[in-house]
Length: 125
Image 1 (cartoon, rainbow, N blue to C red):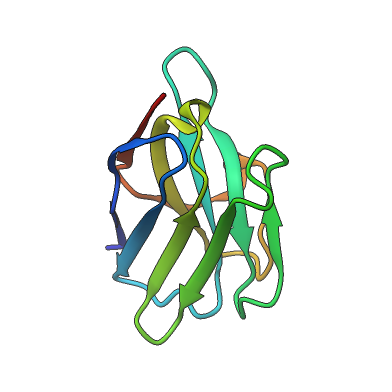
Image 2 (spheres, rainbow, N blue to C red; image 1 turned 120 degrees about the horizontal axis):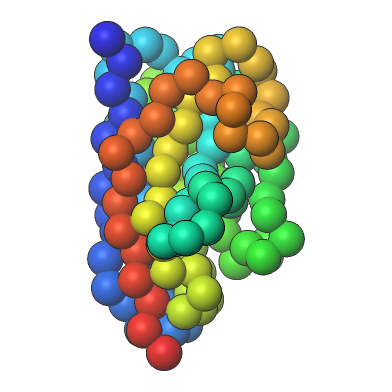
């Protein structure tokens, strides 16, 4: 059984940084595309960042480009999201996702097979 567990969320002031981690067990991530999504009440879960199996190709939502950096450690079966210059509008529950069918990430959430339980990020103004 595949499990994804996010950590690293919390309450910070605007302009601060956080680093989210996602630990995966039950399946290697080494040949899977991975991604981060986020969700706020009343809104659909949205794509934040994605990374190819090798880490060479990344994608970002326009709203986080230049502030967030996605990375992975295939040897440790871990996914990361470095979030800098945080804004109040970044407040959300952040989820990591794993796509066992693709080597490169996609922005649509329907293609991802496994999801974590989420970690809350709150940015105060």
